[in-house]
Every structure is written in C-alpha cells, then in structure tokens.
Length: 395
Ligand code: PLP
Image (cartoon, rainbow, N blue to C red; front, top):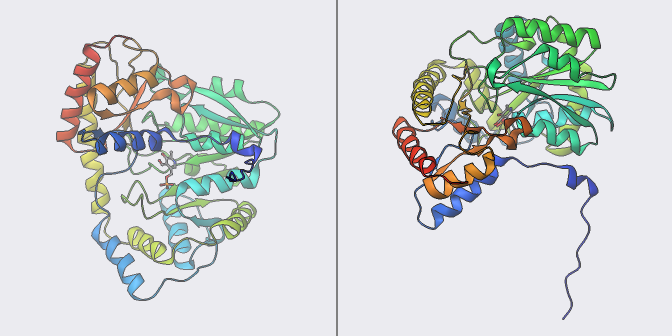
C-alpha cells in the first residue's frame, strides 16, 4: 500500500507560539464531553450578550445586502467614527487615513509587527503578557526582550527595569493597560516615565488599550493619548471586550499614516477586508447607546470584589486587587510553584478551568489567571471547588 506523502512545514512554524486559553478551553470541553461539569474561568471573553442595537445593525446590514468586499482598511463611515471616537477619548486629532480596521485586535497586532520588524530587531514586552506579542515577534525572527511586571508594584512596569531592557537594537515597546493577564493598570506617572524612555531611545510604542472600558478604581489613563508622542505610538483597540463582540471579529489600529498604509497592504494580501456587516455593527456600537457597556462594567466590578475576597480566604493564596480588565492573577506559589501543574490539578480535581501564569511568560510562574467573565453564582461555586482542590493538594 502506498503511504501518503508528507511535506516539511516552513521552519518559521517552529517559532510560532500558541495561546493557553484556547488550549485549556479545548481540554475543558473534552472533559465536558465525558459528562463533567466544568466552570470556565480560562477564556477572556465577556459572558454577556452583544447589545441588541448592535446585533440589530448587523442583521439589518445583511438584509440590506451589505455582504460584499470593502476597502482593505475598512469602510469610510467606520474609519471616520473611530477617528472621531479616538480623538475624543484620547484627546488627539486623528484622521481617517490613520485608522485601519481588521478582523479583531489580534490580527491588527500581528500585521503591525509584520509591517515593522526585521530579523534581529528587539521588541520589549512585559512579562507576563498577552501571548501574541511574543509569538509574532519570534515568528518574524525578531527578538522579544522581557521586562518583568512585579506583584509588589501591582504588576506595573518599573521604568528602571524598562531602561535596563533597552538596547541599541530596541525598535518597539509593547504596553498593555488595563493588562492581560494581571489586571494591572498604568498610572499617568507611569505613562510619563515610559514616554520619556521612548523619546530618549527613539522607540515606537504599541499601546494595546483593548480593555480601556474596564478600569475600575481610577479613570482610564491612555498611553496613546497621554504620552505626548503620537508620531511614535500606535494604538490597538477593538470591540471584543467592551461590547461583548469576541465572535464578530472586529478591531482596529491607529497609526502614523505611513505605517497605516503598510498594515493596510498586509490586510489586503491576507484577509482582503473585514466583513461589511460586522463593520456596520461596529458603527452602531460606537454611535449608539453606551449604557449596555457601562452595565457590563458595573457587573464586572462586583465580580472582581467577590473573586478577590474569596481567593484571599484560601490558605496559602495572596491576591492583588486588579485595577482593570476582567482577570485576577492570584499567587499560588506557596501551594505549588509549578502553575501549569496546578492549573491541571484544579481542572482535574476541581472541575474549574484556569490558566497557569507562566503561559503568559516566565515571570508569571506561581500565579494563576482567572477570568471573571462568569456569573456570580459560578464564581462562588468555583471558589469553593478551588478551595477544596488545593486543600488536599500534594505536589
Ligand atoms: N489584546 C489583548 C491584551 C487581549 O487580551 C486580546 C484578547 O484576548 C486582544 C488584544 C485581541 O482581542 P480580539 O482579537 O478579539 O480583538
């Protein structure tokens, strides 16, 4: 019998990472298929429905046959609305030609790095961080350089650590506030200190502000808006988190125009464009009633308190109060320093899906990421399951 031929994959595939949330979700789903009841605290998506006026706009758009290609950077109406929205919320004067729309913030991040990096360029990335920054950086042969986010600083970036990470090869710094996975937020003082380093060393800063509507204790401080360096800054934002639109796939970037043109060329060569009716729904989200977004934030705020207070009652666990996003990042290192092993135990023995902190970078070792995009009842149940699972834990 003839065996089917196999073909070597591109060498670059070895440099591409993965995202533990999607891996853990698949594992948890497999257990559910066996009949287990799992509480999902692993995936970073709001459990709320997309606001109805947004859904209606998408449906209406399909009915009106807005189902064809659009320009690669997006429809003019939405690019204008994003330019106006960013101008208003970040205190800048943004124009349509700076805005590129994509099918999610994630592809916009990827295209931005692809558009800018040559092999050997260094990208300073907080550790821990959203995995896509590091994965795409290594994929193109550039070099990720970690700068630690420390628990004792509320997971903020220490400017002295940042300064130490910078070399003559540093091209890009990625910042993300509110932060995934820690929930940490940058203060206006942090922004000033980071901007000073970016200016001094001529570094381009990518500011991922996708959780900007999820700031709880202080008004959201935007690096993009407050750095005073828009010509050497890029904004990443999107609709997934604020409007509970993860599955629609809609995000955007705001760039200096020549970078916007390069990112648009990459969009054109890959996705061609973002679905027309999805862009129409995004327009309704930006221009419509904001109360559903505010209501989701209020609900997240209640859950944050519940989860942090519950975690602090588990012997051996410490937990910072996160200032934003919808994640907590408790320290379980006294119970088990190998966070991935512990996350697997919590799934197997406790039926709660959580993520090991080190899957976001080595500095996350000993921590567990939990998303509180789940009901208060489920969070309470998850807390008692986790408490039981770690009470009798033997490494
Ligand atoms: N940036 C951060 C920090 C995230 O956590 C996520 C999603 O989890 C994204 C960007 C991308 O989201 P999306 O591609 O759904 O817009």
